[in-house]
Each structure stands twice: as C-alpha cells, then as structure tokens.
Image 1 (cartoon, rainbow over the protein chains, first blue to last red):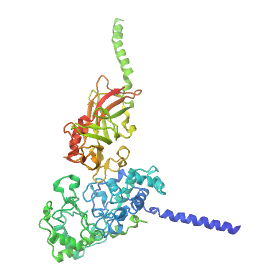
Image 2: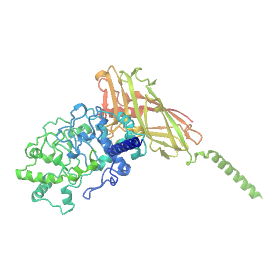
Image 3: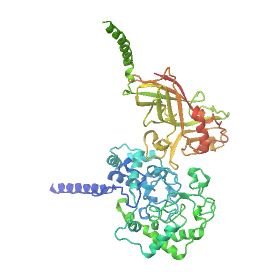
Image 4: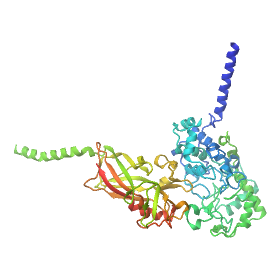
Length: 345
Length: 256
C-alpha cells in the first residue's frame, strides 16, 4: 500500500515537473526582467508610439511566440523567424531572397529587423507605412507564409497555450487581428540595436575608442558614404538607385508610387550589424562586403534613375576599402545578436 | 392694479412661448439618441442581385456583379444654423452579400433637427497608415492592401462578356490616398428642411439611401469594359472614384 502511494506520489511529481518544464517553453520572460523599450542616447525620438500599444512582458512574450511559430504558415514550415534570424541580426543568412512555403523563392532579400520603431515605412519599396501592419504582408504573400488572417485566428483560438497567452497579454481570449499585430509589434518594436562599438565610442562609454584603422575608415565613411547611410541609423530612409543594373529587373519603389522616376529605386539599407547580414542588396547579389565596395568603386552602371551622387561611383583604393570595412565592423552589436530575450526558446 | 393687468398680459405670451419651448425641449443637446441608415443597393434602378442578374453599363456592356463592398466613414450631421456634429469613430463597411451590414446604427447623437449629412466614401488619410485596426477596418475584411498600405474604399468584382481579362473578369478595387491618385471622395446631401432628420430621446429616425453600383461606370467618364476591366489604385481608380463621387448615393427618404 505504502509502495503504491509512493509510486503515485512520484508519478504526480513527474507530471508536475513536466508541466513546469513545458511552462518554461512558453517563451515566458524571466520573472526578474521587465521588458522595456529603450532609446539609446545617440538616437532621436522614435516614430512608433508604445503609448498606443502598452508594452508588457506578456505582450512581448506572446509576440515572440507568434514570431517563431511556423505552424502559422500554409505548410507549417515557415515562421517570421525563418527569414529573420537573430544571429543574422534578424536578416536571412546565406539567402539571396527569402524562401517561403513549399520552397517558394521570394523576390527580395529579407531585411534585418531592428530599430524598426524609428522607421516610417517598411520593406525595400516602403509600401507598408506602419510597424503594426507589416506582418500582414508576410502572412498573406503566396511566396512567404501563404495564409490569411482568418486561418491564423482560427488556429490560435484552438491551440493551447495561445488563448491563455492572449488572456495574459490583453485580458481577453477573443483573439483578433489587432491583438495579433499589436503583440508582434511589441516584440519587433523592442528590437533595438544601439550598443555597437561605434555607439559606445560616440557616447564616450566604457572608454571605448576606435583603432587607427577604424578611425580612418570612419572618416572615409563620413566623406564618401554618409550622405545616404546617415548616422545614427546608417540610412536616411530614402529610396535610391545605386546602379546595380542598367535596367533593373525589379521595379522597386515605383511599384508603390506609380512614378516613373522611382523605377529601380530601393530604400537605402541600414549598415548596422552589416557584418552579419550577408548577402547584400535588395536581391542579395553580393555575398561579401568586398563585392559591395568594389561595386561602388568600379561597378556602378548608368541606370536611368541612378542617384546623382553615384554618377562617378565612389573611387576607393585597397587601403581605403580595408579601412571602411574595419569601421563597418564596429557597427556590430554583439549584445543585440546574443540577447537571449529575443531568441527562440 | 391696471399696471399688474398689463404685466399679466405681457407675461402670458412669455409663459405661453416658454411653455411651447418646453415641450420641444427634448432637443436639449444633452439628450443623446440614435438613428439608423439603410443602404439599399441597386444597379441603375434595378435591385442589386449578386451573381445572377445581368446589368448594362452606360457604354452598353453587359455585366454581372459578384462582390460589392464599400466604406462609409466620418459621418457628419449639420443643422440649419450651420452647427455640426461629427460622429466619432464612424467607420462602416457595407457588403452587399451581408444584408445586416446594409443597416447601420449611429448611437450617442445629440438630439436635434439635422438638415445635412455628409460622409467619406472610403477611409480618411490617417487611418490608411495607422496601426492595427479592428471592427469595420479590420484587415480580415479583405479591404486592406497588405503590400501597399491602405484600404480599398470600394470593391466591385464581377464579369462582363466585353472584358478581355481572363474569365471575362471585372476587378475594380478603388483606393489610394496619395496625390495624384487620391481616391478619397466626400458625399454630402441636404435634407429637406420640412422633414429633417429628427433625432429625439424617444424617436429613432431611419434614413434610406439608394446606392447605385452602376455609378462606378458612368458620370464623368463612361467606362468601357473592353479597355478598363481591372484597377487596383492608380489613375484608372481615380476615373472610377470621380464617377461614383456624385452618382453612387442618393437620399431617398427619411422615416422620423
């Protein structure tokens, strides 16, 4: 009898432990962490207002779980995190263009995701105007997750622990598109990368200092690159053609504006974390920074809407290229890339 | 004594008038009530029957309608004295396939006699670029462009033997808020002052609008389905919006 009680007790304990373990996998934020949106001292005021989407640990945790859940896609193979990998600063390592469901090859290179709260337009062509509505594109695109909102909602309503997570985050189990999108924005909006060596140098923190090569690169950068890749985001968020082709295969910005002079233009990408966001350009054609710099040195083509600043390219000798590369690597934010709060658990 | 008779004589009409005013005084602006609007969908005078009925556009092309949905938003009421009341958060999606959507209720409207109504056919500029919305503006309703932010204001899909598109399809998705292809249009109509919209605590009037889907294809520009059978924003959508801006809605009558 005693033995039987003992066995039952052990069994109960095991179940309890299993339950506790499974609990931990619900992407919960550690109890001692308070998720917050922090504006680095060298950044301006953000464009996105968390006042309208109150940031909570539960909302962030839900957004993160949705971000990493491949079951939301048509064939359950693709999540947001499939093409936005943390070790690539939430870009897609080694993929020229994103791979959607059933190995569908997308049209453009998946951009990195960070500092989105300062962005007023999204995607390479700037078609989407709000951080919250950005995921709709990936959900519905036939070459990305190929689903629709109604299907996603139905899945979440009948899949534990989602109703419970929505209850915790928003006080309701009545799941709708607004709550899905707001929780995703709580995750993606909090992804702030502003603690690279460069940031520490400009903020004069931890007695950080550039090496002489990095400093030479920084000075070259300010002279030759910063008119488009403007600090502190290393983009001015404008749309430009950098002369990749005489005739662009992708209409780019004009797909949104319908304006002929926007044909073949794309948003100037950030250079933060560029060490880890290869391949480069809207179509991922360059695998290394050497190829990118050589493009500006010798490869700029006379595209019809070529940016006037690039009509003579950007002449760079071998030493200058090395110096610029050294500087660009100071834009890597290791803390951001390794922060387990943002990782799939 | 004589004086007090005079006084009484003077007071009487004042009392009379003020008592008259009293009985009318349910129009105190503190009183809030509701009214309803019915949108009766038609095609150039005939009832709109989805999928089966055949209609003719002004160009003489035959067509059928499978989908007809449109936004009515930012409803504003005005009184004869020029004062007006904008109904907050008034966004409605009318879908010809959902009869309940063709009757809308406006709550918490200050009591009064309104002699003009105006509203946006579509959705105002700001909401096209706002964060995640719910209710009528929920993207689940299939009226939001995910790749180029903004709402489809008026959606008509159907077929026409004259259409050169695959399967003779007609696809008219009208939207876009950026010049020169801004398709936001405002509709306004005066209400007969003899029978204004009387919003009262105990009265819930109904406005009855006739909505002519055929108005998309005639007005400023007669649409020829052989040459225009597909638009999703852009210059051709502006042609259609300019057509329906005046011809799509007509206030038929009010039940007070």
